[in-house]
Image 1: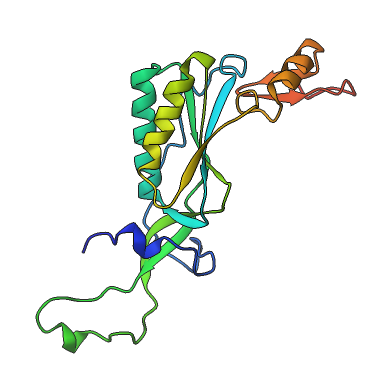
Image 2 (image 1 turned 90 degrees about the horizontal axis):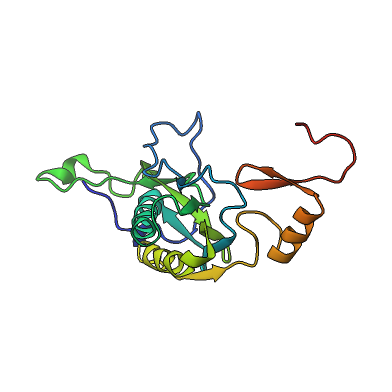
Length: 208
């Protein structure tokens, strides 16, 4: 018996149901890689950032997230080059989906209990998202703005519901607007920390 279509599990109807010592036998998530591209590149290299934002409260399956990641990565590699972007999936599938398996072979009516004991077995994983929650973020150089927008547009087709593409005023994956970031860097207030920054208030050591 194959997977049920996404429409069966699209809405956040029940309580969050996660893998635990009580809920065993949960299949692995289809999405394993959450960062793609030049993920080790310094925060100074990629100032531009765009987000794919959910416009609905719904559930997105791990299969859909993986398909969107592949589509987005492939488009960016084609139009920008594999070392000219950093793609990050912002949601993780923790909610376990259940299925009440029904038999469809001959003589199934003797074995089947119908809706008696209908609590199902784990079937897959999904991420529960809210309105306005970022699903995918891409940082790149300003010249590759069009490629980022096109990649996020193609990723939208892998998800149910509505999504919007938002261009951020922030510098890369930091929390500072571009003008504020440049001002703080010139004042030596920010320390580069991989693909983000740490704020230095000049009170004691930062730890390195």
